[in-house]
Structure formats: C-alpha cells, structure tokens
Image (tube, rainbow, N blue to C red; front, side):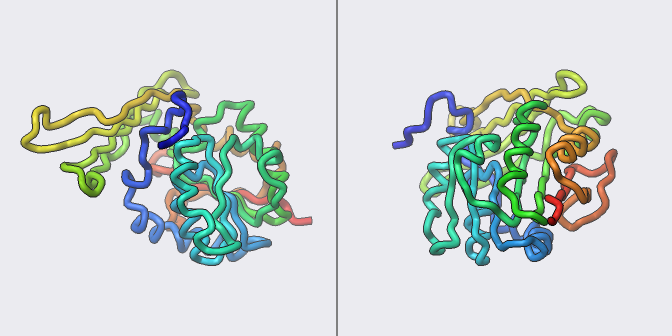
Amino acid sequence: MSDAPIDDPFRRLSYRRLIAWPARIDREWPFLEQRIRAAPDRSLIDLGCGTGEHCRFLAQKGVRAVGLDRSSAQIEKAREFEGAFGPRGPEFLEGEIEQLSALTSERFGAALCLGNVLPYLEDEALARSLKALAKRLLPGAFLIVQLLNYQRIFEQGIRTLPVNVRPAPEGEEGEIVWLRLMTQVNERQILFHPTTLRVRPGQDPPVTVHAAREVLMRAWQWPELEAQLAAAGFDQFERYGDMNAIPFDPTESHDLIFTARIPPR
C-alpha cells in the first residue's frame, strides 16, 4: 500500500500507463544522445522524473541517471527501477528542485526537464530552482527543457491538448482516455485540468471519471525564461520546436524545447 500523503495531487495519475513510452523515447533519443555526448560527464539528473521511464532508459544506455520528483506517489513507482543496472542507477530522490543541495552532493554532466514541469513553479520558485540546479551541474553541463509553447496557446485561444487513448491496465476492461483541458486566467497563468476517463462500452455508465484535478500553472514564455536562466548563470541558449531540432516558431510550434549551458571554466 502506498504511504503517499492524501494531498499529493499526482497520486491518482499513472503516467506509466497514460503515455506510450517506448515510442516517445525512441523519438527523443537522437536529440538527447547528441547533447549527452557533448556533456562533460556521462551523468544526468531528470527533474520532474515522474515514474522514472527516462531514467530507466538512460541507465540502460550507460548514463548515470538520477530522477527527482516532488510527488511521493510517483517516486514510489519510479523506485521499482532502482538498482536495475548496477552503480549507474537509476536512483530517485523525492523533493523540490530548489532543495537539490540538501538532497544530493553529486554534480552532473547534464539535466533533463521534460513534460510540463517548469509551469508548476512561480517566479521566485523558478529563480531559486535554477540557482540550486546550477550548483549541482559541472562546468560545461547542459540543461535540456521541454514545455508547452504558451505563446501559441494564448494567441490562438487553445483550450485542450490532443486526447490520449490507451488500453486499460492488464486484467481490467475498456480503455483509459486522458484529457488535458486549459483555461487562461491572465497573461501569465492558466488553469490546467488533467482528467482521466474509463471507457467501457456496453457498461452502465459507459464512461466514468477515474481522476480529475485543477492546477494553477505559470505559463512561461521564452523572454521570461531567458532572463531567469541568465540570472542563474546559464548561457548558450538554443531553441527548437520539437525533438527533431526544427527551429522554434513562437506562433506555430506546439512545444518549446531549449538547451542552456553552465559556462566551462
């Protein structure tokens, strides 16, 4: 039985079954591998690691992989992978990014922050987090970040991300449908409503809500992020529209992917 606290908003979200992980990581790996190859050390910390799928894959590739997540429920699932590949990991830590110095003394050759992690951090929290991260990265280390392109979302009034349909867990009937609804609050924030439905044709009712929650998120756009990164000591910024390294288009790209570097000595 999980000992996750009842106020853990991620306790009912199973990212492991909501996402087609092998296909996603296969798409991302060429981009990630190129950056990891250029890093000063073959080690990486995954910020907002969720259930640990990227760390497991990276450990298989011989990368020293450490995952960090604020959710005790997600870390509990991720720790099922711990020690699977010897001393290279993966290993998992529970806590906030700004607590890194208290959680580990290790320094890494790269940092990964995929998904929509940064929007959970408001201005001061992001500033503290980036400064804490910079202290745990080696000179010349890279940060790789992916988040939604909120400029496009705001300008086009986009209210939902693509619907994700996955088979129900083994032994259960039907399918799981993942909805991600958004409502703009102001020019800096959105309300995000991740919702999972259970669809069982022929049952009464055929559709039930499995989990739903509301999260107020900071809709970070590039000029603000660039200023925060520079203040924390990062440089050499590069932006892309996807993991194929196509140029970032503020009005068309669905995602904002960027890399930043800790300057070498």
